[in-house]
Amino acid sequence: MTLTVAMYSHDSVGLGHTRRNRAIAFALAEALPEPVQGILIAGHRHATSFDLPPGWDWLVLPGFARTDEGYGARHLDMGPQELADLRSRTIAATLEAMRPDLFIVDRHPFGVRGELLPALEMLRDTPCRTVLGLREVLDTPSVVACEWQAVGGGARVAAYYDSTWIYGDQQVHDPVASGEVPAELAEQAVFTGYLAPHSTSETIPAALPEKPCFLTTVGGGSDGGRLALAAAQAPVPPGHRHLIVAGPQMPDAHVERLNRATNTVTTTVVRFLPGLTELIGHTEGVICMGGYNSITEVLATDTPALVVPRDARRAEQKIRARAVEQAGGIDMISPHEVTSADLSAWMHEAVHRRVCRGHINLDGLVTVGALAGELLEVKQHA
Image (cartoon, one colour):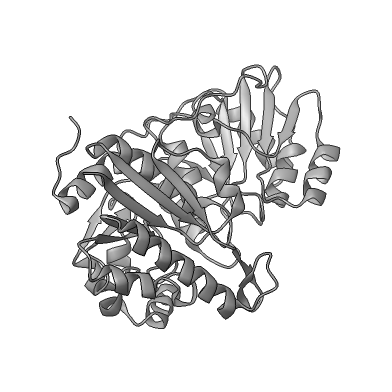
């Protein structure tokens, strides 16, 4: 019998939710007995830039984006509720047709404007097991409390989910103790460890700057222009190169400004780089923002990292960066303080060291396979 897994992420800013689900998809494909198929529901067209395990595919919904008024259509000329209704019908029809054995939802239990509720109601009448996946940091407790209240509270959410997986190390940051996770979800919560890539299907690109090399990456790039510009203007240590990955969502004008500011003798700017995850471990140092995926990819290596967390709109990245810094995993600097001189000084210092991170739980991708097997009552691959 074929096992079917469905996964959802809404992706209003960046590709972090999608990339987290993709990593889990590879882990489940490896851990669960064959045959297994899956579908990843995403909200950004760039999701399909990434490959998937054999037997898995993408369902890319018309996208939402953050606006000053909240969520709005990314491309279509539709109101937010019209778009949510369209997406909701698409999701429900897909899941009704596929009848998944396991449904994993990333971060937002009912989706944008409750778009997942019809599908979750439908799945209640099937044997499907449901999981709410939460990154280890949500936001300040007061902000998160309002968000849980807006969706009906922890008890209402828990009624739709069989388990809650928290993708982090409880010793680094504990969202249960901080109050970020409501008591009703905490009762069914399991800490998996960080979803750090122990292996990946990606390969190191052939056309890379000669080593030794520093890397700056700003995730999707929609709000990474200031950091990328400071990095482009930072002198690198003698004999070193610098690769800056601007991200597929960085506005064209910002990329052009980067290229104008770059010393092309030492620094290269690209928008997208297959194999970026694998590349981190082969660099002298990484400069990045504080998103979940960026941090976990760094933690999987011994490469020094300077994290410049986003602090607009949400406090999540700042909380995460501070916690991981206190655990000895990274260096951190405030985005309001960072200058090209700071980045250059850090690179000159980082060439002399590597970082041991073995004390941090990085086994999340192994653990989720075991947890899925328990929920589905199937044996893992040996």
